[in-house]
Length: 212
Image 1 (tube, rainbow, N blue to C red):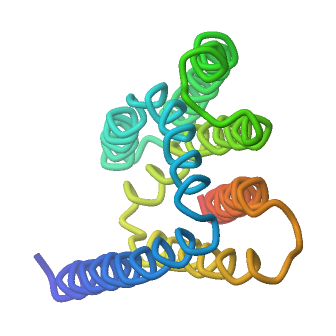
Image 2: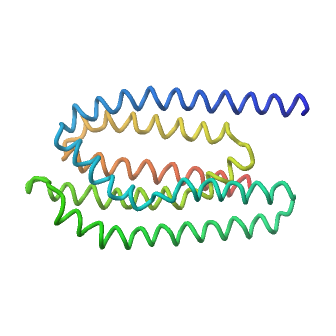
């Protein structure tokens, strides 16, 4: 292992640890503030309703690891054509998974939300709003996986860390926007989280398209 490789590994490790530390600190702060702004009832509704969608996307982590391994294998072979085909195939698979989750969420999940969950009648509309945007956020996250995997497979951990830091900062901004904008805080929070996920997904895609 050469000096360049050692420096790259050290830099990637530092960036990932910095990302993890910053994410942890901001999450601890924002969770407390969001709880204060939304209140116990709305905060509970957001986490429970969003949890239904998370249940449908349990394969996401496994698929991310598998995609990364396949891409890294093709990069190691220096076979650019196979790499493009592999990436296109994994992207297609993730799009299909996202639409399957959409169908399940809009049928079984929606039935469960409307009939089985104990949510106050006056907050049911807000809960449905949160549920729909949670579905969209989950779909964006699933389709984003191949782009994340491509960045990690090429060991661009600094870019992965930078974009993650941008995401954390945007979520911190959301907390302040909840106090600035006069609107139903629960609905606004779900909408802003979706917008942030869309922006972050776009950054990953733009970087991959431009550099890879």
